Length: 170
Image 1 (cartoon, rainbow, N blue to C red):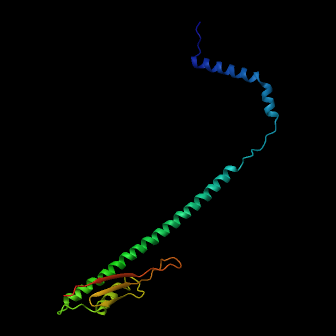
Image 2 (cartoon, rainbow, N blue to C red):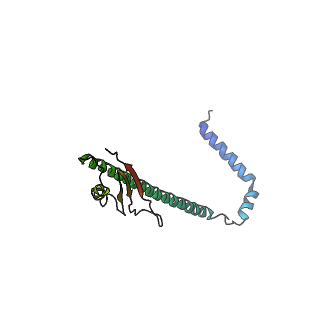
Image 3 (tube, rainbow, N blue to C red):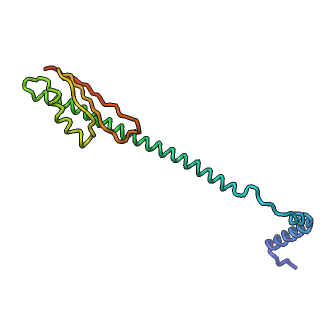
């Protein structure tokens, strides 16, 4: 007669028999584990403390990154202001050239003739004036641009931008 059990059922029965033999073979071991009182884990809550310290270190690092970002933005704005001031000084030179070309005698214009239109054009709408001006004569000019900057740190002051040029004597 043939066995009607499938091979899978035969394996399950065999594993059950071996498992029951193994558990009955060591009953004394089971009793010793069960008879010991359970101790509280000594590292309970330590992972939470580690996580809190990691969050603290990360937040301090992020504050440092934010401070660096703020300083970078301030420096970029100051660089932008320097570029605008440089353009304003070059504009003063171009105005001097324009005055020279308009003069019938081809004499160098006075610094005050250049300065009047130049100050009104650049300061007030583009830059905050802090005592800028054009000085010179005999075709040598010095453009000094001073401006107020609200983004400077405490105690930090911006140096004036000084631009010198000379027109040819015609």
